Image 1 (cartoon, rainbow, N blue to C red):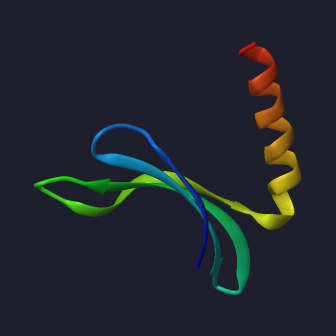
Image 2: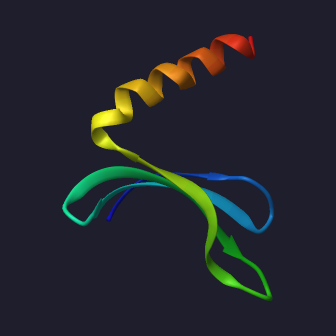
Length: 69
């Protein structure tokens, strides 16, 4: 796993972006990492985008950015 970056969501949660390989397929994982008194580790929240679909995903993100201006 190659970490690309992190964004703090709140006091206990970060959004972590990683390049990963799963069953021979490379993808981008966007997951929540929790650090709290009760639990520290990965949450079930997140998505994995195969690299061959990244361009399509990026186009959707660009539309989201345009819509929020």
